[in-house]
Length: 186
Length: 186
Image (cartoon, rainbow over all chains, first blue to last red; front, side):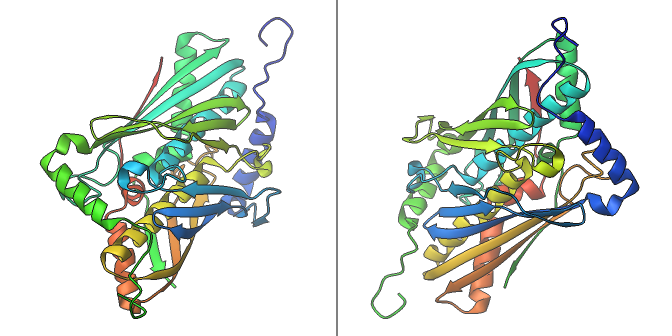
């Protein structure tokens, strides 16, 4: 409880998540999820992607909404900037994953959040993707995420929230540890 | 040239990209880019992200458009499904990066593309992010990308396009190789 009698409410149903953890501990096959997207090339570096169904809890899951995304390159790459770049999608994924985790952990620790904002920046040396220097990687040389958090908690507790979110973040793990990717042509 | 007199046109300005490669070979400091996003927590696992400016070619670059993205968890996680999940953003980034690369390489190799579609799927064992089993990773156990490509080229040339796109893809590199991520609280 914070602010006298007001219950802590960050909008996360932690009881349901804890119940899910218990249920999935007993039924690990239900914990096997498949997340998906489809991508259609439009023209140039411009593509349109959709996200809709996924598999989990032992069955196909349909959403009420289809989410759609345009990706492109910016004008400085002689493209038409009809969407965010693919690498910016990764930054959005990482920032939103850590932010959701902060809210969930805060709820579990009875910390009332008032505001959470993050800025995220990735450094890229274009000599990689342009094939100028094979010693330069194509991806980011490093990513920095900076949080501003207003919450009913001491600074050390807020820092501990962020640390716990990193520890359990799917996208943080994807970016910091290698994942096998298979690409095939049908 | 394909189809008799019609010039190959995949909508990629390869001449400009080759000129950029030459220019950046002589001025590697201009090849240092910073890509950015900002993320604002709304409620629960729901956040709103924006992508706008970036740094490159030695200066801040402003876009005409601000791109905005909602992220959330689905209803099976006791959330409200107000946006794609963070891990689906990574899948969109990977598919759109490889697809843009296929178009660029095809243009450079004078292959006319007619259609390119990709489906992408990542396997995740939720026992990781739920903290059930510390031996299970939080991220994807593996990702499969499947392309269907209709183009004026032999199958082996189409497969070579896809392979070259992987070789130069920023997001493919981010997902398959580790990147250092620093998270701080201001």
